[in-house]
Image (cartoon, rainbow, N blue to C red; front, side, top):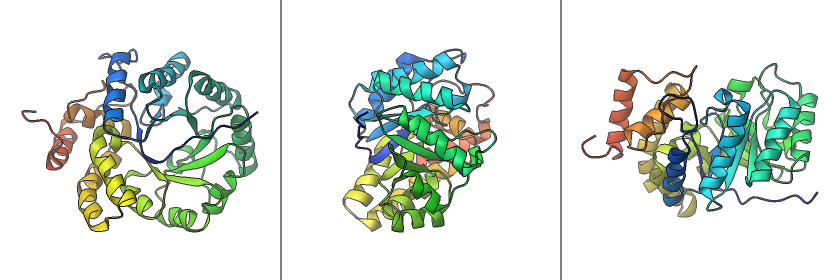
Length: 303
């Protein structure tokens, strides 16, 4: 099998799965509108069906349809990374192969997240899934949700698995990410995935950020990348980061998927409700988030 590459870099939005008003189905018209908005804002890619995309609430057929719908909506304008999360290796392989078949540029692969696998079992799982497809794999390092905690050296070792080229680091461990970026990036390419560490990750040399807040305020996210990573203007980037940090900090203080959908509602681009068991944010949190987004100039006039 000839392995394919993907030019992943920059700000990659972790995107929601829009649902109809009653939450019973994927709202594909809304999904297309979300995709058009993010592409127009200059984002460098999207990750669909990840944590932000509420993948765990999707029925098997919906999961596959959500991947397909995002690929179709983006239509090759920017890369689409399909989140793959499953407890059984066979199901993870099936989802990965579906993503490849419908045109995803890469997959973002969770480890089995119930009963954390030992190292040897994890390597076997990742090797099997990566070996079943030709598109590259991003390892989704999110120990708070999976119970799988890896050292920087172990994360680097994952890069020895053929096809596993990237890691999205959602550990929140700035010291570990600093080590990974400073001395271990010859083996694996790192994306920051912890929102409030986005500035740190980019400034430390990450290839980019997979960032839910970029779905809400894509122009601000792209501007930060251009200022910090492209121009290297640290003073200007620090000023831009103040509002983005406040937005990111809020999202991390509440249920993440609910925070993203609340933010989209506030800025005038609603993506429907969250799906049970994820609850919508209470009114007090929405009021607080509205103030934060208004301070960043992101609330439409009259809203």
